[in-house]
Image 1 (cartoon, helix red, strand yellow):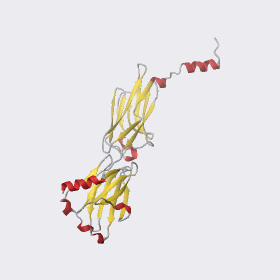
Image 2 (cartoon, helix red, strand yellow):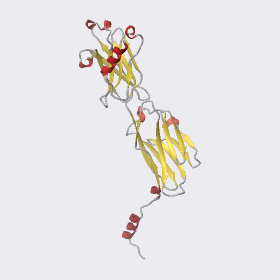
Image 3 (cartoon, rainbow, N blue to C red):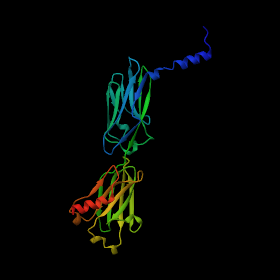
Image 4 (spheres, rainbow, N blue to C red):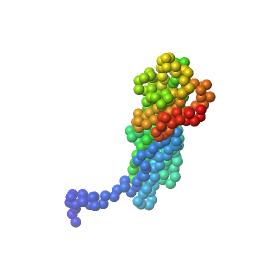
Length: 260
């Protein structure tokens, strides 16, 4: 029987199964990472036929390998290729990439992680993107001779500092305030802000603390807050709030009134 070119194409469309489709990889397309928390990227193999032989399986980012496993199930980790502390685990066709914490440079849709498999049933690959949530680390505050100041450490992605005093918003221009920002080698932002207050306001004798709050430039929510006052007024205590969610600025003044 003679098979025409058109008939051959019809046969290909009628039997589309290829070795590439015999084996698949299952990953989560997107993962959310909380500040300072461990996050795991799992890559699981799934085959429609028996006899799957894995010759190589790896996690990589931007074409840079992070860890791999060979046909003898020997696991190799390339820690020098990533600034984050991580390790990998492999069990029965499942390769996991585990980060102690995710750093800012490794977050976002522009830098997905790729899981790729080499096997006798195909060479599939899939991507997982890790989204680091808003972060705020330790908050420092002090009242110096020139006025109150505060510093927010390990901030991600960025923020603006707002000042309050006795329920009044000082960021409306009534009081001059300055802000300086820097980024460390791990990608965390440090934000320092300080007020320049006229002596006529008699701020040195005020027992009411200043509130220094950080508003995220992404969600427009307050993600960190601290009360700034002289040591003789707070008894050495620090009232600092850091949250993954929205912060009610006036709650900090309520906490102050409860403890004094």
